[in-house]
Length: 163
Image (cartoon, rainbow, N blue to C red; front, side):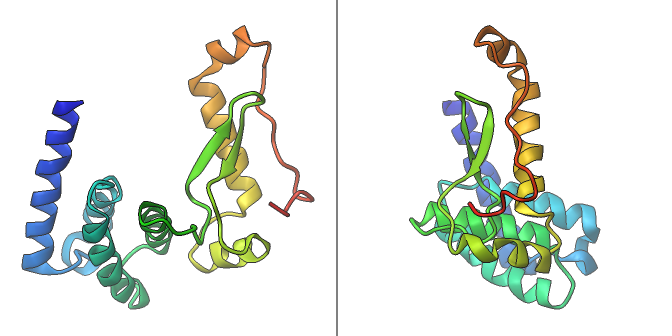
């Protein structure tokens, strides 16, 4: 754990230096892959929510210019909100009901319009996403679930859109 913490701490310092020198590294500066890699590392800087918020604000400007990925913006928005005690907006962060192997969103603002917000940034429907996450979680933990007599995840239907 100490090693993991030191790696994240080193990464955060590097990311902060990059940001201070260049601003948010959008597609025009580092390409889609480079921008995605920067975002992904920031996404996991959970010990530094102020840093994540600073990056998110700059990312929003770039996203509005089509110079950053809207899906990544949604993930970071939700991560920042949860890390600062707020509810998420896009339902990208989940937990699991391990008794039935089903993904459920962490606290969410206005679940009735979440699919509209998700669509605006290019994310799939919440039902589709939760089913993907449930399936992935099941596959990663299949042996443990089989020991409990669970042979498949519980998936949502399109009619189950109310969270």
